[in-house]
Image (cartoon, rainbow, N blue to C red; front, side):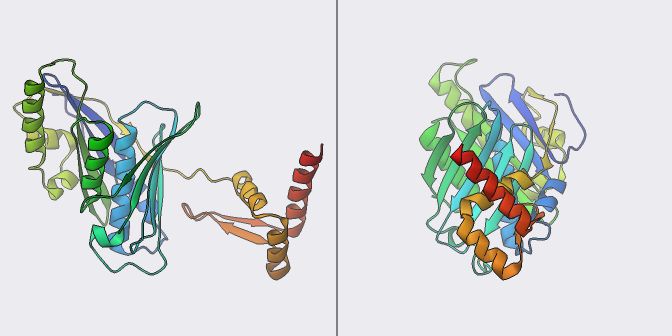
Length: 294
């Protein structure tokens, strides 16, 4: 196995040479801090959002696409919305929404009666959506159930987080290539997944990727690929914000201008503020109306 140094804010793939099984290791430190900075989330919310960020990255590594993958849960629990997304180029962002500051530490209470939606929004073709009711006491269990229902390939997720970041690992069966015998495939999966479950949260957070794989699979032949960089980046722009104002409609915008002298929109993801004065808003709607007229 080729070793590398400790890679922060990256995803790194590995495969087993003698079994149809792959894996991915994800670390988010600065990306995680940038995501939760200034949001005043309770620690339990920040850490759960960190898991969602890492999960969006792990899910993005299971497919080939050009665009963005969005992992979203709406619930009747203490957190109304939890959302994270990862683009095909490794740009990550996420938010959490709630009316009252969450007090529970239980996954089932935070996201009670939740629905998990995975959206793959590609630049070519129609978006794909997978939906499943949240069943489990953790995000890892819910994702395991999603893959059991949709892919029918063994898939396990592992997450660990603290105040400074989040680390995660994916282990997944591949379609039969090296071995077609179902019994052999099941034996391999039981062996590798059982070893993976011995990994502790501290090990996942503190060890390098190479050390983790040596700790779990030092008797196995595997290949560790070069890491891919991840970074927090918001896709908001002044133009997109202006389009959102158009959706609100002229009447509502005019009422805001009369009350406040203009409109200020703050991006939930990155905190960027966009200010629109009366003249700019008039021009924005006039251009739209002209475009509809002609």
